[in-house]
Image (tube, rainbow, N blue to C red; front, top):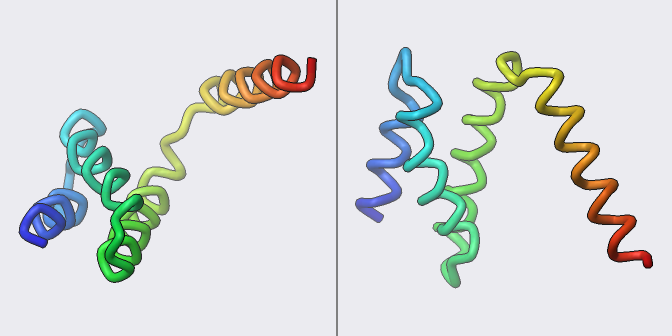
Length: 79
């Protein structure tokens, strides 16, 4: 739980960069696979906050490339 609180504190800091958020996000992603439902809920809730804060800074090019990669993977799976 201490690790979650540290990640939560990093997310709630003002003026954090993506480089500073990366370790916190990776820990929260690991917690999403936890066997404890409370920890999973807290991790998803905090990741949602990260996505809400950074939604405006996502580059359109990154979205397009991500969509292209998903369609390429889907085509490979279907063949």
